[in-house]
Image (cartoon, rainbow, N blue to C red; front, top):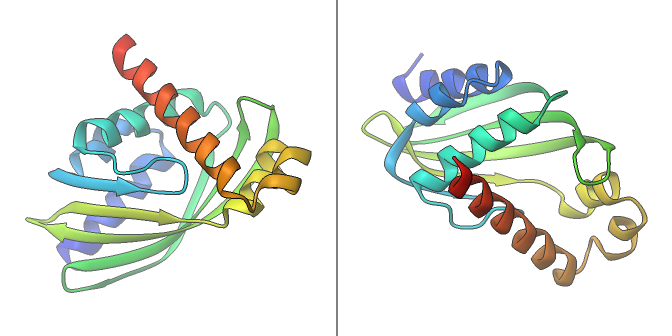
Amino acid sequence: MSTNQETIQTFYEAFARKDSATMGQCYHDEVVFNDPAFVNLNAQQVRAMWKMLCERGADLKLEFSEVSVDGNKGKCRWDAYYTFSQTRRKVHNIIHAEFEFKDGKIVKHTDNFDFHRWSKQALGMTGLLLGWTSFLKNKVQQTAKASLEKYMKQA
């Protein structure tokens, strides 16, 4: 197993244990993170995001598979099962992660998932009707950013 593959394994095994400290150690200090909710996070922000999600994800269950690495790039699939805190609705999110590595650490992490599928589960009728729109996606991004900023100020 390559160092980069070990980094992915370590990251998701730690995530499954809600061990955000170990997750954070897998990131390079120059990391950039993106997903449909959190956009262009730097190292401090992404480490805080995972810490926040681990602390708040009381019923979070995680599975990961299809780990592959080719040189300094890697990818995997991960499935998250949790209750969305704002609506108390159950979610099963299927995420495809892509990574770039530098010095054996993740320097670029991009998570992709079907936002409309997620929003139908997490937000119910609002997600069903508006989950395909940039309006709702932008609203979710603004809410996520504000939540992370508030969390980081309290930490």
